Length: 363
Image (cartoon, rainbow, N blue to C red):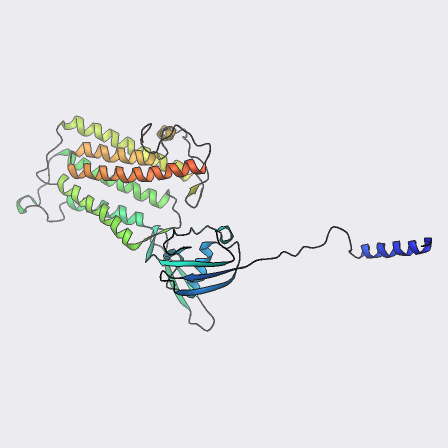
């Protein structure tokens, strides 16, 4: 090949490169793999078939797709699992991370009517399908459960204290007990639930999760029933004051107020922590507030203070129903505290080893 031919070839290559034929910048076409999801009910009857579901779709998004086909089953009412008797999948789980292939079979379970955690505030979603009549589906958002649990005991106790319910013998029905501890107990009881109401509305952070309606009714029955039971005995005209008189009453009152202040302080501190759903983003640590120093020893000091509140109220009133309510509450809060303690130790490798769940250095 002569020099002239080499020059022609060089000019050709230069011209092609000038028009974008540069090395190393070729575009890569990504092979996108879609999933096929079939949803069956507990009897393995096919409900729907979802084609071309993206691999990064979450279980929550799949629930929304199912809701578009069956509007009566809104996402909070659905539970999806990979086995008819398997554990329900979480809403934030991603499809491609599940132990399945590109063809997935999921099983649907109806959880029944659901209500949110805090205030009754309905949201309206309009569904306007092609050729369909527009209709509105109402979801009950946050702030239902806690308000229902707190408002009931607050008013029930006042009904007994003011003798608005004719539950005692007729001769004693409108007779108030002269003991000062009766009035003091009413003030403490109302103060406790009023604080919880304020925290529910202004401080607490709740997840978007819901509860079955039957569970809410059971919780309300528990709180309302115990409130009526202890209020009946404390406000009874024949109520007997504590054995050690004012020393027992006012000592317990001091502990009660300290625990109430501590509980409020812990909830304020927890409110400043960021959360990803139910998972905390940071380890809760004590602040300059002395009431938060209990974080040095326990993972859930709010439960510790709550138990202290009802234990002091039991000592103040010397009432068996209050003591039983305290015992049952302690058992339940211990279960919750141990669950949260395990979650903290699982999420954070540098979690303080000194901390226990609810009772410092013990439990």
